[in-house]
Image (cartoon, rainbow, N blue to C red; front, side):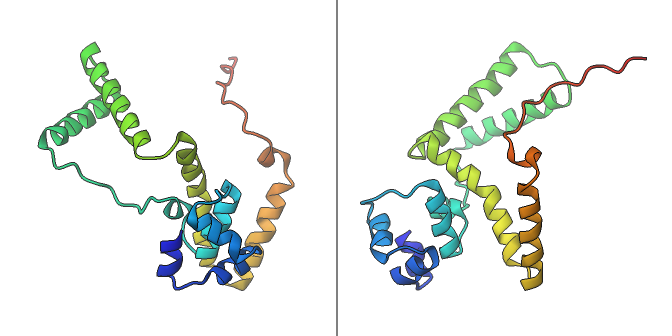
Length: 174
């Protein structure tokens, strides 16, 4: 957080003013003395004008593994997944290769982050950051209209209640 703030040449006071809190609180977040909740992290990201995932340490880069054996395996797995997606039946050994690859990928992904909760927070914040990015491109009248529409959506229960699990519709009677 501190690095992003300094890159943007912003002061603790500027961030605090944008969030409606004290500069001391922002300093405590930067030093690690206090941990902000997800909602606060979203406010900090907005104040810094960066996506939440960037604030949480993901810079958007993908590291390429220089090991050609792993690259060959990735290509092989990709082909197996494409074959399976096209409806082709795979052998038990081929399905196991896909499963093992997915498990290794998940383990590697989870090891690179502090906790599953932080990953969930990053993913949750991605959609909001897309909305914020689009919103920032609007002019004043566009922003006013967007705010009205979002407010209208919050008054419709089907958009505010938790999503119902998907079920298969009953077959049509003939």
